[in-house]
Length: 115
Image 1 (cartoon, one colour):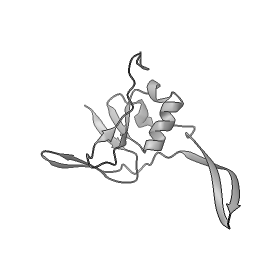
Image 2 (cartoon, rainbow, N blue to C red):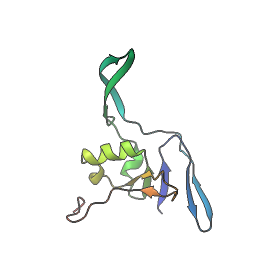
Image 3 (cartoon, rainbow, N blue to C red):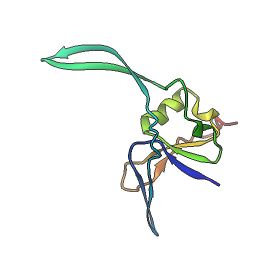
Image 4 (cartoon, rainbow, N blue to C red):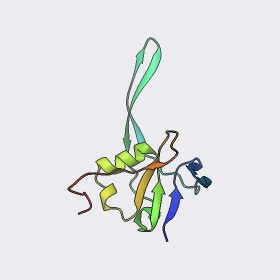
């Protein structure tokens, strides 16, 4: 049975014809690791350059083929650009912050990265 797993810190609300479906956070937040690369000042204001990377270990729900895992859009993009997203059995999506209240997933046209 398919299930949503919300790895963001916020409830996700999906608006349907029947009403509002709320997907609460599970308590574990999937975050990118941040490393400060450099800092400079412009007119006394610190400007920080940072590098964001995937953590070394992914939560176990990413390996459940019945899971629809909700993460932040930056986390989804990091999973995609590293190629890890296409190797995971779970479906990984990010909230759509538009008024449609849906979830986003990355789709590619042919050839499919899962082939």
